Structure formats: C-alpha cells, structure tokens
Image 1: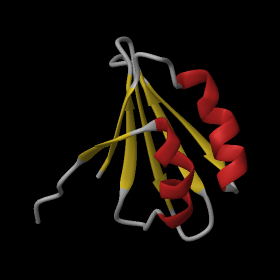
Image 2: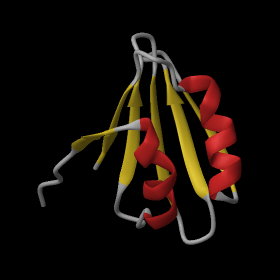
Image 3: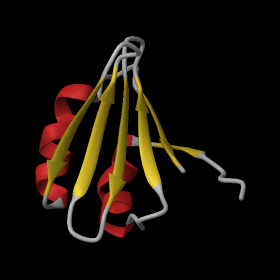
Image 4: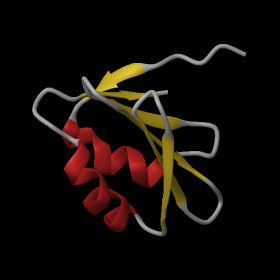
Length: 82
C-alpha cells in the first residue's frame, strides 16, 4: 500500500486532528526534530523524534493535543498529513 502525504497549514491542524483516522497521521518537521501524531481508538499518540531518541506522549482530546503541540510548532515548521 502506498501512502500519499500532502503539505498542510497550521490553520488546517485542528480540523485534521478532529477527523484523523487510525491509519492516518500528521508530521511536523523542524530542523532539529520531527513530531508524529497518530490516533488510536481512544487517544492521540505523539512521538517526538530528534534522531537519537523517541519520546511518546498521549493525549485524550483534540484540545489537549493542540495545547501540547504548541511548543513544537514554529514559524519555520512544515506540516504534513499522510
């Protein structure tokens, strides 16, 4: 199976988190780290990867997920949906 990714804007993020399916995800690319957001049946899984290690965090709602992601979204961040 081939997954396509598309670039999204920060304005799209909340909407996409609300409709995120279990086989979809969002990636935030920064110069020094990548953030991956996926959704299980009950919660959001956020993987902060800096190349040397991965750190996993879990949030129960879109609002909590957005608040957590604020510190990782910068003006230079590139966001993708896949």
